[in-house]
Image (cartoon, rainbow, N blue to C red; front, top):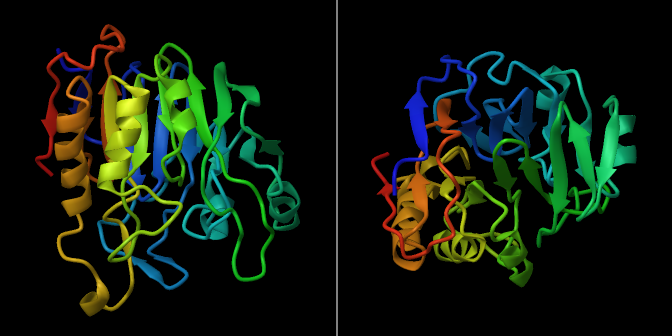
Length: 282
């Protein structure tokens, strides 16, 4: 399969659709004329967690047309980061999150339930199901959890935080690029999260042209002795497993801040038997 993407430094800009992984679940998606950012967390510290990779450059997201929140956990809905984002469009959030966000100064909040869709800067943003606890601990609201499917000249699926679920197969044939969580911030992951094997199973169900692992290698506990070893191990394990169970899907591992252009000319492929490429070089 010919490559669906070309890589450039984060500062490079063209007219092509692109994604920039800014660490953890934060991805800047440039699609047609829209700039959308997911679950923005750009600080060095989030609660008890510290950023163990290079910090996101100042103003990394730039001006965005919308912010997409998958749920209210602190490592996905970081209020200090949300307050610094230069946003000229809506803040999309799961049902039950709106009142809490508005009370903390967020404007133009739109609650989304799975199946609901909204046009943002010419791109259709559809909320998709997710299987994950949405409670903002310890005293926050119990809101929902969602993923998002962005549809324009290309389609990008942001899974948010989720476990594997059967309805992921409903996305098959609709996704060019899948942004898939493959780990978290501790030495293990529990219910409501994807590990490399379950994340690869999700990719096999969805069959995108390109899968990019996210939600790994960015945040950790402050004491090094309590951290897992090489933070890139989950992402590499994901790439290897996708090569086994969905060889027609290309996998690219990005470094935080790396931007990847999506070639408009490369069609999404449903052929699971077509030779793919898993780039596990980082």
